[in-house]
Structure formats: C-alpha cells, structure tokens
Image (cartoon, rainbow, N blue to C red; front, side, top):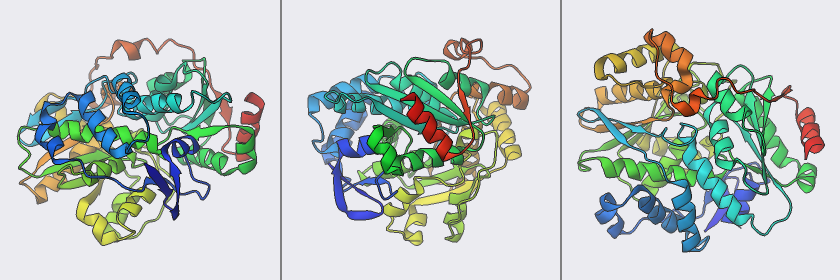
Length: 433
C-alpha cells in the first residue's frame, strides 16, 4: 500500500510512514494511491461473516500487503471485538449503534485499531512516540482508552475548555499514566491548529517523535470503513437503495464511507448532517467552501468550522463540485430543531437518540421526503448518557447511565490549562518530553 499527499500526487510513502507522520510536510492529508474493489466472492458471502471476519477481509484488500496477514488478523481480533448492531425503528428506518466500545463512541473503532497498528510498527523503535490529538468531544475519550498504558507511546489530548460534556471531559482527564490532557482556552479549531502546527514545525519534529490520532491520520479512517459493510450486512434486503445519514464534524466518518463505496459497497447516497457549523452542507448546496470559526452547540462533537477531511472528500471527486453532489447531500439544523428530534424519536419509537444522532435523523427525514423509495441508516455515534444533562433537560426525565460512565463522576480531573498560543504549547511539550 502506498499513499500520497492531497497536495502532492506524485510522491509516495508507505503505510508505516503515513501512520507515524500523521500529516505530510506540505500540510495535505494522506490518501491511498489505490482503493481496490473487493472481489465478487466477498459480496456473495459477506452476510455470513462475523464483524471481525468482515473487517479482516476488507482491510486485507485495502492494505495490499502493508503488514503480514497473521499480524493483521491479530490487530483486527483485538480491536474490532465489540458489536455495531443495526436497530430498526420503522420500515426503512434504521439506527447503526456505534457506541458499544470502551468509551461509548464510534471513535473506539478507529482508536483501538490505530493503537494496535502503531504498536506493531513501533516495536523496534527505542524513542518514545508522542501522539497529539485534538478533540471536540468523543475522540479524546476513545484515544485515551485505546492507547492507555501502551508501551513506548505517550498521548497528549487537547480539548476546548467548557465545550465538552462533563463525562466526556472525565474520560480523557482521569486515566493518568501515559495519557495527559490539555484544556485549551479556545475552540476545537484552535486545538486542531496547535496539533497541525506541531507537525509542520521541523525543529520540533527533530527533537520529538510526533504522530496524530485525529481523523487526519489515515489509520483512523481505515477501520471506520468496516462498519458500513457491517451495517449493510444486517439489512434484510440490499436491492432497495441504501442511504447513510452521517452526523458530521471533522468529516472522517463520511470519508470512511466513501472508501467503503469505492471498494464496492452499494451506497445510493451519503447525507452530510451537521449542526449550525454547516460549512460542508453550504458547499454542497452552493459550491462555495468558506471555513469559519466554530459555534458551540449541544451536538458538541460536531462543532467544527474548518473540517480537515474536506480535503480528502475534495480529492475523491477531483475538486469537482458536481461530482461530489451526486453522492453526497447536505443538511444542517439548529439546537432547537435537534431537541425536538430527540423528543420525537423517543415519543414515536421509544428510542433514546443522542443530539448527534438526532441531527442525522432530521437529515434523513428531509432526504426521504424528497426520495421516498430508499432505506436509511442513521449513524448513532455516541451513547446518549454521555450527554446526560442535555438529554434530561430535553426529555424532562432521568436517563440511565452505563456503569463505566457512572464511575467517572467522582474521579479527579487532571489537565493543564493553556491559551491557544503555539509557542506556549511547544514549550509545554519540550518541558514535558
């Protein structure tokens, strides 16, 4: 497997180099040189596969021998070892639950796979590897859980002060050991800018061995493609057009879906569902892409004003707006609309959907109004209990909390507080590693 930068299509690196560098020197994003089609036998048999077997077959074809098959099998079995069940609310209305991993968020799939892959590639390196990750909510907890106590790897998680839920914050600030958190006096975009600038700082990279666990790292996207196949596998009938509604922030999840489609998964349409941070839906509707500062919402993991993975989406479609809009439709919603959707789904179906999934529900309903003869799958990206206060305020009732979240409430938060100043962050890194 070879990869290139979205800003330089003629220079190639190995998967190992792409995973460890995270970001190319030219500030592009790594893309696979080829995304191979899965063989016909896969789609004839894929309903018989377990989730881990399916993930192995997909990754074996996509990675094209980048690591030995027996090692790939080990990585898959130790990382894709929790379910992604498809729940049916009504005819042609389904929810793909992606919150059954350790941190109760979809990012567990990417974080666990990535930690295992990095650990394999890092076996013969004596210098410690420092993972930098910016989070708008769920990424931090998933990365913390995925990399916790991994030998030879240190993790630094940057999160925007006051802009993640209490339980999300506890997930990334209470583990200790090799996991350290930085509370940034700013937005997610500020956190992400600090991470990106670190990778582009050649002097810093000569002193410290840095990598990223954000969806800018290709190792995060590869396993996220697996559950699109797992969702399709659980549908009774694939002859009716399948539409995925994807709550979106940094757009790694949707980009992973595009990889699955390129590999042959029959997807009729992707829906880019956002809150008021609607840079991508605006582009899809107008052809004009204008990043802007993010706005805080109750679907906080989607509060991104300059989504990194848009560069990959753009690359998929050769920077051609017309081509992208054939496959992707965009919708955006306010907090009030989101709250009403949470109430509607609970009242009508007895299902607790979190604010992010609620945005996906609204977008799917809007798309189905114009395209009734489809079957829709909403990606439910996090357990609703992670947003306990908002959920209880919306529904005016208590909601159950899983034990693994409940035990966090009394744990002591440990975080370093910094302004969104690169020199300050760089000094912190050099003083601590």
